[in-house]
Length: 633
Image (cartoon, rainbow, N blue to C red; front, side):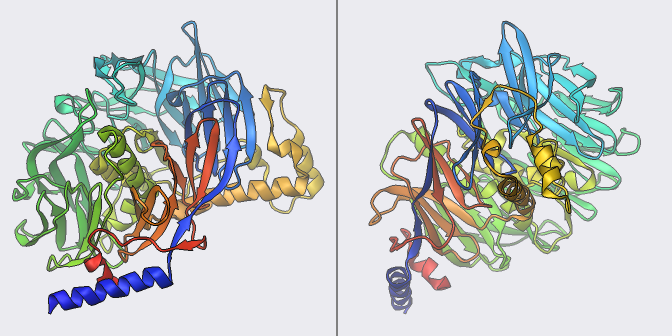
């Protein structure tokens, strides 16, 4: 009977593909630049910053129009950093041991301020929008062989966000281990601080997480809290959790302990000891759930390794008392999801497991049959979705019953590291848009991060690095860095005011300093078109704050559609309803889901591919095990 039922489901699925088709989206635009593209990264306002061997460009992500070009600016990717919550991007120019950092308007290229007191490339940032503060973490000469174990002593500068004037600075007390941007064997590469959680402004203090946990008075730099412990245990990245908090405390992990730091005094209120390596903290009501063990990126070679012991501990958030410990995930562990107030769901190497939040007892477990299960999330049906590099499946959290499943193997054999990087990049398309932040804790009142408790935003290049292939780290940390509604414009976008006559707007938009900017698009548009373009960029930022990821992408052979590309699986239904056909996919590709464009580079061209619905329809072959998928049709 099951064979007949599955055969019928498969037939129905194939008929739907043939008759209805799947969106297979082709190239939307191509922007020809002056030299080979070295890097590109999207921004919150819809422009893509692109670096070539000769210049830095801003390209309109929706149309491919060049917004501006900065000639004679040869920069590496880690020398360009968008300031979160603003329309600014920082450019770091290092020459003869001298550094000049400019804050420029993303939309016009105009410099807003510059400083020659800041030395090195910008590694991470924190922004206090309401307090008008910018904290930048810089490191000098951050280049070397990937296997060299590069260490540097970063410098933290706190600046006036509007002017760039320095308020105070702090040098870390010791050299700390950094993370390569890629693991090339034969050439020097840039190094980053992506193996650490970025700084945060909280309750008038700046918190750093490089040598443990340290806090400073945000306005004068006076040190308030300091607990020093080794970060990145065993040469692994992000072995400690991103901090979470409530109105009273900030909760951090490190050295096998979980601790509560008072937001009023900055002092450690309590400490739960002997918890184990804790890469994830989830705060739900008065209980902290600490995940121990997981998958980590090894700094020396970029390989993903598993490290235990694996489990979950429940801790009273007011006293630090350990309420219970679950140690049944003895074959690896994914991140935590909470489908309801009484249930925690995780997966290990074999099973999807539900745990009772009242006592830590296992309620159910069922095999998931996903190779290399790396992450868990909840969809809008409150189903637990477990995923790996090649496969994703949904389960009923109460019974463990499989609901749907989709699998797409990477095309050909190729270079294993390249295939892994592309697969991780495809998955990060989802993570970048906060899918975990909005769906991991459905139905549970939960503190998803500290940004909701202050006006602070943090930035790190973690999700944007093409070399970062650890899906669990991307899933765990995307919820913490998801964009919010807080935004402040400093460039041409700040001149947008309601009810102003066009003549006043014309004067504001054409009054610019003389700088080495070419091909500026706004100079060629009439005032009405300028307003239209600027309004769209501001709309993009507002839309981004509300955007939720709906599809997980897999890099595969699009059989019957002439070539390789990305198959988009809807995480709510299991249907493969998108495909992006790309002959030679650049492993650095990124997307802008607001305008529905995927960006990829080929030589000196930046290419935009539509990932929006409504494109030409072709039949896409079923997933490799589509009998379960068909059950959702």
